[in-house]
Image (cartoon, rainbow, N blue to C red; front, side, top):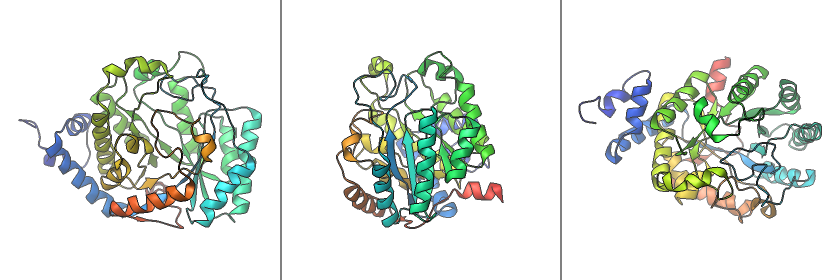
Length: 363
């Protein structure tokens, strides 16, 4: 790192500033290994070697938003739109419960109509009844009113993932239409409201976007720390042909460069926020067949096996080349068991795997 502070000197600091984080993100392969080793050390000391499974249900691809990067955006007419039936959801819940996943994620395109809100509330109550309250539920259903967040919380949801995607408000404007449905401040308000209601709050960003700089990514990590999040899901930006941002594909960093940068983001975040939950996202595996294992080795401790019926998965592609879209739940589970073991970790079967950060803050 020339005459600047060495990686070791930066990692010895109690708190990293923006300049420190940019320096770490800029490291070459040799210095990156130092960061990865430190992150692995922090992970072992603060969250251990347990990996927690969150069975993922991609409930619906109907979406009211038109984000420029997303395959299921409202303006994409190439997908068959669907919403899973209650029976299909509960079949996935039964599988997760019987296989001791202990936690599930219900994800969907953003909707806020009365029927959708009621459908989710009803399902949450039914999941609690079916699992005798033993399944913890994470929701990832976008911006809602405080009343809706409360209804879902009281019905049995305990975690909520609302990805900010980028913490730079000016960059946010470049990635979303300029209308009332896509407002950066509303996104921030929703995150704050979730905290007020009592959820374990998660967010995340994409890495390697058009117009994005290392300064932006450093600010993203500092945003997570300053907001005091409980969990993070982030990974490489992967373009989709049916989105407006696809026209910038030739200006992007190569996929493997985006992947390596994503690993550094995971590792640096683990060092900065030692006891939060960090997901090894599917997008990592899209670029590198061992992407999720590599993320586990540098700080991640959550994986989300897909329990969505195979017949729907082709129509829930937020980005292209998504892996495992034709893999049944049992095949996915067996594969992940092996992957997690290969990464030197073990599956925390039967454990909720709540964020230790959330617990310590609330104690």
